Length: 120
Image (tube, rainbow, N blue to C red):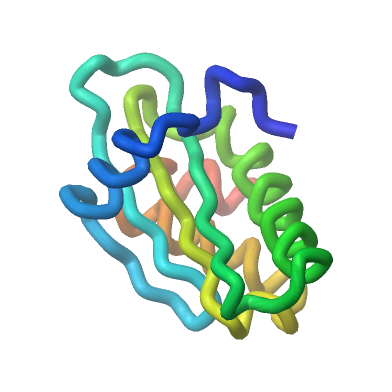
């Protein structure tokens, strides 16, 4: 599970990342990345809307995304704020597919480097 310091908890922070961050659209997710001017630890937030499924399905998708980000938080650049929005197809996507997609997004946006991604 992500530590509290590694999570985005404020609605204003979510809005700032989604509105002003760079976007990477994948098959199952949309990833927004914005560098926090205050620096600090990388922080992650998740948006899983009702279009993804019922409460059980949404929580499953959110837990999967948290697990993926927990693996990436060690390698992530300091001061990066990342918000991952799950698309409806994320409910039926295999975990490996979600993991690869989020890693691609984080590499493309410069949050983690390719060398650390290749070690997995």
